[in-house]
Amino acid sequence: MSTATTDPRDARADARYLAYAHRSERLATVVAVLWLVAYSLPILQPALPEQVRTACHVVRTLTWAAFGVDYLLRLALSRHRARFVATHPLDLLLLVLPMLQPLRLLRLVTVLRLLNQRAGTRLRGRVGLFVTSATVLIGFSAACAVLDAERDAPGATITTFGEAVWWVATTITTVGYGDYSPVTATGRAVAVGLMLSGIALVGVVTGSLASWFLDEVRDTSGADAEATRADVQRLAEEVGRLREELAARPRPGTP
Image (cartoon, rainbow, N blue to C red; front, side, top):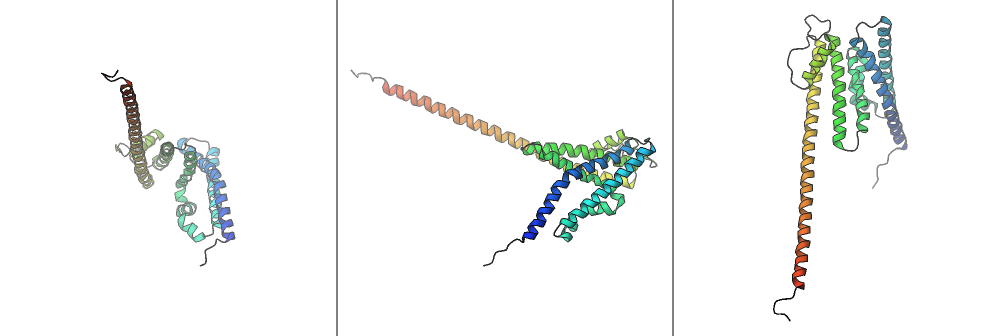
């Protein structure tokens, strides 16, 4: 019977890909944060000097190029290039469709992954940090995106960053007061993404709380059971001592 063996060249290729992916993760995080700053600064400060706006545009262009180089390097290092393209469709879309450039904020998920790795060994701590970080990141990104789309639109109700943040808060929590709502196609697309994100985050929070309650009940039950066993043990020891004392006493009528 013959056994399948792994080609050493394939193993080396996989090792090179994994090594590059590990090294590039932190760099991709830094690049994504730079893109977020360059993207949000002109939105939050419309009166920026033209030189600063130009610098932000240059940074966004350079980060787009950096993401493109990263994609091409990962594609070149992958042994199964067709599978790589099929399993990374969003990365390719973000490179070839300029209208989807705001979605490059999804690259900031590497920030969440790095924070999640430092949240400790308990699952609840990791989930709590991940949910908090994801909520802040998604909320800020959505507020900037919807403000950029709505600010100068006819009939828009979201014209300041404060209004955008309030709209994000009511939307991501699925409350939806309706006092602020997007009127542009881009703003509504951001709203759909935020709604889906809100549903996912609420599900994670609910599951985390349920897990916490179950752990508390389990811990309490375990502590009660330990206490009960300890009480029974002490009672058995006391009964044993009483029996020894009774056995040691002289019986009536015994000289």
